[in-house]
Image 1 (tube, protein in one colour):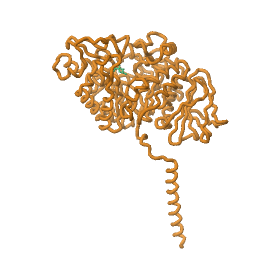
Image 2 (cartoon, rainbow, N blue to C red; image 1 turned 180 degrees about the horizontal axis):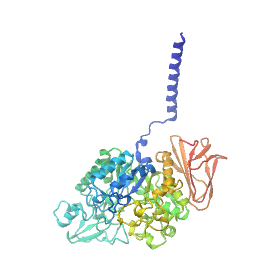
Image 3 (cartoon, rainbow, N blue to C red; image 1 turned 180 degrees about the vertical axis):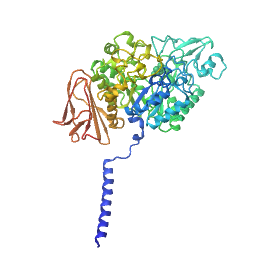
Image 4 (cartoon, helix red, strand yellow; image 1 turned 120 degrees about the vertical axis):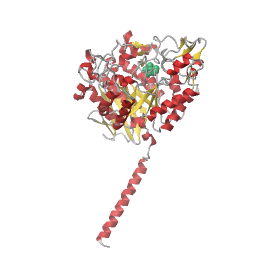
Length: 578
Ligand code: NOJ
């Protein structure tokens, strides 16, 4: 046989061998495509913000879409995947936009529909998704539907709200804002009837028993999907689906309504997300996620969040571990969203009085820091005494929990709060961009809301421009943490277990996914701790820190890890890279 033919045959053979071994390797690893990897919310970092407090482009003192669009590169560089946009539709803003007066527009204060469209386009260019807050439970009392409903008994909108000719017995029960709100049924002279409002009295509840209201809700969802949003943060879900006439305190619920929303949204846009605000007990979760995961894709884990704060306040981690375990089993592709602070008070309503008092003592000792008989209206940095190590531990923790991390604008800088402002506005002050006048937020003489201008949280000290230049800043730390979170898709996609490490103040979680594992350890105590992480037989020989430059080898079946007070570490098992 001539040499060239021999060479040709050898090449063919080695080629066949190569493909054969590739196929056997693939089969051996069983890396069949995992449909869950298509679910973008499984491993995305969400950033919550309000247009009005983010950046003002036209010098009128209020943030707007053009200002926000200009800062997309900042958000892109931070590494976030999605923006959760607080309500931005026309509103008298008696509840900061959660009192909607027109579902189909953009509040002119924030810009034109064109500015919104441009923002959506630019966000897409930056690969940033937009999730919009949608308030369906109630409208503003200035909404034309309510105006017609209250003045004309025969109006088609009358039945869009919940009325009673008589004052219901539980007229002063079931308030969402106890201490501030006095009743849930208010008499309306124009209507000659009482109307139901779960929240403030200028927020009449819509009647979701009425098919016309359900149809309209679908139109609203469809409208905004058409504008390019990737999903909705659905406000106040337990109250959308409740039947107030069955009792304001413990009403019956129309859970099927959530399935209806999900079917509609998913049919219109296959990958659209419903992220629900539902602060419910673990035994109710399956009603909200659906038996087969066919209702909400994700919900904030308010239940575990309260025990997380209890752990941060006391160093006792056991109740938080229990809460994580009690909320572990999610149906289908459902997944939790985890957060530290949001735009509201921290709700501690599910803790025992003794537990709540301990959290108050540590984080909100003054009456002015507490709200609605259940929570604390402060930002994280002041609560944690602006202790950098403690802040890092808390954020590292939230990035490592089994779900989607949600962070709040300004927390990446360590912004503070302004307790002189009413209720929850204390934690909604304008973003601090620079050390120039008005923090670079606006060129107006007077911003629409005060900017934190004094003390350790004043914009002169805490601002994005200064932190950008400082390699050790919280801003750069956060960006790095987000990068590390993204290198660990095991968190959103894998199975997880709490690992016992012999120290009650330390939480250790291990994630396994397709033969890869990561582990995260967090010390809730201010004292340094030594822990022993059990190595899984045969597989765990070495673990590699993703945070520090170190590698640990198992000895006698354990990895010995030292943690500083409020220390934390992330490890990859077996290799420094995936
Ligand atoms: C929950 C929102 O988070 C809160 O800010 C608002 O006041 C109520 N829902 C009423 O919409």
